[in-house]
Image (cartoon, helix red, strand yellow):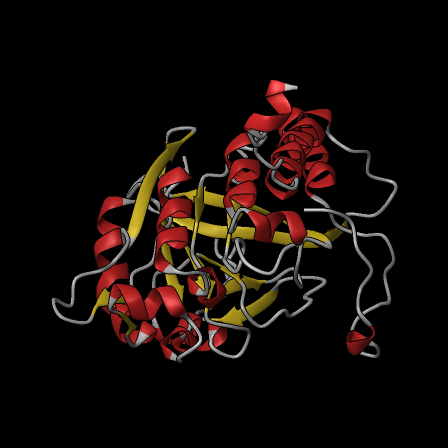
Length: 310
């Protein structure tokens, strides 16, 4: 929610960055992109968003993060394993407060086998039908994820689930995007083994991909790049992943194919000004936190009868 310094534990793997991140800076960048773009803009999230954020985030168990995302009008989110680390009541509160859908196809009720969340959503953007589906890591099955235990949920094989789901999505949508919380080692496997995915927006492993990783899945042509782009933007909002995709529509069949993809990371450093709407939002939540932390005033005791008599 607020700017921070990249910890020393990442030394040697990523650039050392000071005073980066913050919801207010992200708000500014998102609004700038929307204002300047001639094409539809999709704002999406791949999980681990409502836990381990800041003192303010922890005070309200992720609701502040959800409020920020509602205000910035996210289109969809795939939850990560840490989004289930709260008690179930808090995870459910975050889910209910979200004005955008949480999508996940491979997190199911242990007893019924039914998905806990909608596996996907389809949105029409600029006349194009876009399917967004989510997949979560098997690490959510481990013990620390309290809400997952309390709700009786279990992750199942993402490749098997996607292999059944994606062909159905291709019948309903022009473009299929996966919001993946599987990690950088599983995403290429998903792209290779499940035909029909156009783009994979990744999370979980905190990989810092300066440009998209192109996973070959076919023969390149003038209208098809022959690959599935996999992107990931490190962690904690220090940077925003910005991916531009251009699709070609075959007039004879109506089918869309990915013709071009360019992606980059945008540092949320001090050169990005704070969005005043998000600043005020955080100030309101901080005021609530101060009120909760204020010591209770002792109740006044009635004066002794003898003192009253005097």
